[in-house]
Image (cartoon, rainbow, N blue to C red):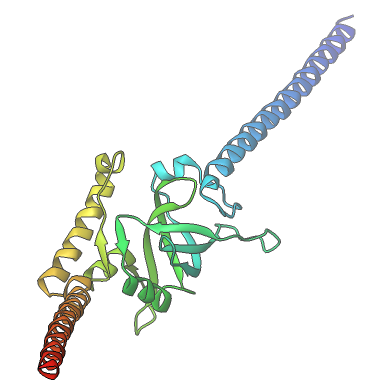
Length: 251
């Protein structure tokens, strides 16, 4: 009787242990599924936030949080559009998928009004080159950006040249007024102060449009006025002489 009782007790313990093990396995599977679900949701949110596969082709493609966070983007300047001085950039996403169609994102150098010589400089120096660009604002026509040109030193180290500062420093551009909300953005204000410093450097060195284009125009205008006045004076004198000759002939 005692042996049968002990055997029944062991069976009960074994059965209870098996039920506990099965329950634990189901719970672990449930935990795994829950973890995988959370990870998948987090990955989806991260992809939507970072947009690693997206090629931006127009201003509206760039998410607003990219502008708020001053997210650095990469691309190649395919050409310079003189009308509005826009850099037409082929954006390169973090993960480049060759099958995705490319477009030309219109980028304007923020805070800089580029002169005619500046457009020529951009076409010679920047067109066809790889750049980093940091969007600061956008509208329907273009994205305003800080633009950095990738250059390599003699020992093949990478350096970035601030395109806006460079244009102003050689006198090929003028600073533009800053409007809200950019005027209240501390990071942009710091950038704009660098632009002003570059422009002041060009003024001190007497570089750019003000010093070797405007004087030429003024000199040509003065020469034209002088020749015009001389022509009028000669015409008046000639008419007077002809009139005197006519009177003498009549007498």
